Length: 259
Image 1 (tube, rainbow, N blue to C red):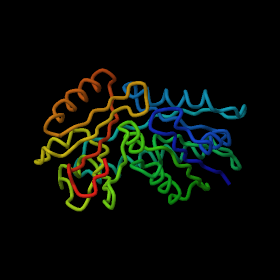
Image 2: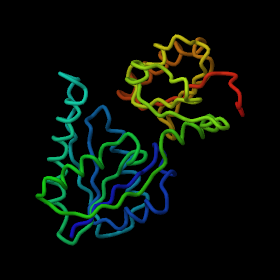
Image 3: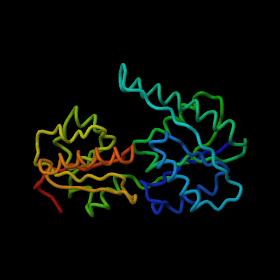
């Protein structure tokens, strides 16, 4: 039976690669590299650099494939994502069927960790349920942007005895910061949702291109640095054509604060 490895490659620094991930790359006959278009060619380049640096299996080969662009939400966010995932599932099915031998092994290189705000595992489950191609699956974890953010800011993610919430920019805009989470990590925020918060005393620890030579980090009271972060973010996005950023929000001076 075909075998698929879903390998977390870290948040942008090739040094984030674990020994397990490197071994997985060298186990695979085929390495699948997604291409998200010219504006995000850096993301494909990083995968190529990782393969150049770590792959020693002379029999392995690379197959690059185009990733369809997700439409703007209409009529709903969930239905738009569902249609997008269905289109990608058709591509994955073709890659598995046509590029991996019946007893072969292929690998998808996933930014960060496959289990955190990445859809590859859900999409592969769609492929499995279609029943047209059989495969076994192995998941290799990777360093996440959240871990890279905490490391770059030299901070612990949690306060003593406090829970952490991981959410999206869309949810932060809709629901704000919950009262029962001492720290809130926000991912997939394309519109600087932190600026919608009424409490400007919240402390923000923000980072973009984490782990890469282009890394930018800023932190401080939201009322003092929120506008600066938005400006820096917009300038960086215009310069590179894309941006990946995440941030942690925390109310200041709560009991149990260990910073």
